[in-house]
Length: 306
Image (tube, rainbow, N blue to C red; front, side, top):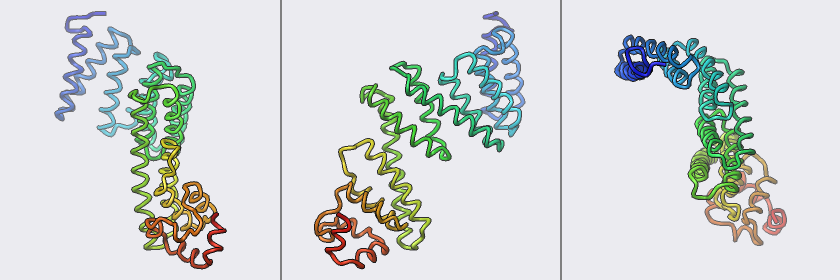
């Protein structure tokens, strides 16, 4: 391996830097030449599966994607992902990162089934890491990457929610509450609650105006997410505002029993309910609920909801 000279690893590193600069300033032809020369020297000096060579190939794949050469990028990322997994193991953060990039390009090229299989594999590896991390920093780095990967992809919302919940419980048991990983996951959950509540509130307001069942269903789904994660983070709190919103959405889609259960759990049902119901809930109550309440006398309603 040559460390200096025109065909050395130092020269290859310089060429790679020049390639990045050229692509960054829209000199694609010059950048491609520098990148090809850098890859040639790195492979010659270090071997084609050396980490530095694989890193350079990832950059080459990114360049190909920007040039809309999806098929070439797909082939290159497949090679790099497989080599990285063999070199570092499936649970290493770099292996997972490249596996995720491969899933993304498969989605981009309409290979949805193959992409789904890779995403499932990533989540399986992450679950294994959660079970056996035992304080290993390498495992926590990988888990951090998987968490960010899933949260950033809306089509993985259901899987992401489940993983976030499991990760939060695991970190709470194994890490101090001021550790970076716990703080990050906790903040992601708080962000999720805020975002879900905003979407749910907007959908519920529109549903009450237009009496659209689909809007009530959207509100139900988002309020349920916000309420569930709020109970996970603060199990000792009733979260009455979220409970009221979820109950209202339940009423809107005709799930009366579910609405009653949520209200009972949040301590919103009391004797003489109409007088004791929070004014904010009454203000939010949609027409269907008003009709439901008005159809019963006070004693019957208190008995029904108690």
